[in-house]
Amino acid sequence: MKLFMDEYKGYIFTYYVGLIITLTYCKLMNFIKTSEIVYILFFNTFIVSSFIMYKYITTKKSYEVFENGIKSLDESILDLGKSPIGKNVSNILNQQYEQYRSNIQEQNKIHNDHITFINHWIHQMKTPVSVINLLLQEYEGEEISLNIHQELDKIDKGLNMAMYFARLDEFQKDFSVEKVNLYDDVIELINKERRLFIKNRIIPKLEIDKDLIVYSDKKWLRFILEQIIINGVKYSKDHGKYLIIKNREDDEYIIIDIIDEGIGIPRKDIKRVYEPFFTGENGRKFGESTGMGLYIVKKVCDNLGHTLQIKSEIEKGTKVSILFKK
Image 1 (cartoon, rainbow, N blue to C red):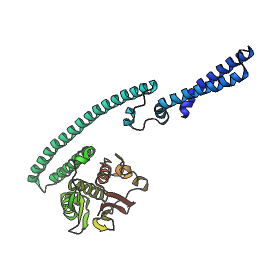
Image 2 (cartoon, helix red, strand yellow):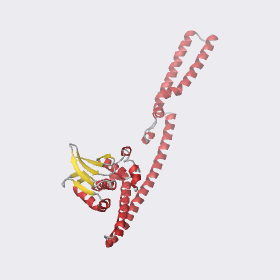
Image 3 (spheres, rainbow, N blue to C red):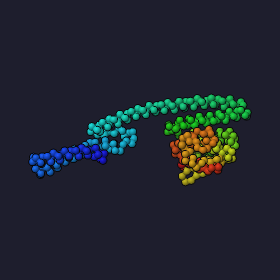
């Protein structure tokens, strides 16, 4: 209403100035009586008011858009009435909407093609990694074999992270909730990462009930646990001896705690560890950090309905907790 009145107050003012000048001239020339002046004023006010009300009713939607703006793309296809201004504004907004939709479709196609290429490339790269691992079995125990295995593990983990990151956008199509035995999964992960534990001289301590069951997606949960365990081991090198994995529960959650005795996370970094590409002070010290691990972990936990909590003290260690709803 305010914008509408701002638009028409100039016209109203001009109209009344012209009317008063005309009536004053007519009175001075004795063309009309005083009583007729009052009647003319009232009659013209009625006509102007009726016109203003008509214009307001027919253009109300347009002025509401002008005042409030458009908060979503769908609002740009609103019907703004049959008035000339409403029709023209609707046409412009519809044209803009079609342009945006066309651009979005084009960008989505480019994005999907990119994701498809990345996924194909990752799977292609995994094949030679697997072949090299098989070939290295012939030289098992030799120092050069151990060094090559370590580098291959880094490549494999990097490829896995890229693959899971690429799948985040279509998470809803790529997960299935089922019963998961956490003890079996953690044991399997520890065995898989035994070289990492040995290299960093960290001893895993498992304090999980053998029959502990949670509801989650087995594949994505394994990625979550793997990332947290790898971080715990990596940042415990030369600082701690144990990586403790245990379970507890309260009235609402089953909780898995992964506790290291490493360098800890600085307080200024703790709130930013979920940001993409954020490596923080520890990432600069240790290197080889992409800053994407915990970002993906947090996204996956949110999508699965799990809660992720991190508590840390400098030089004392870090506790990462995953909370599963009962």
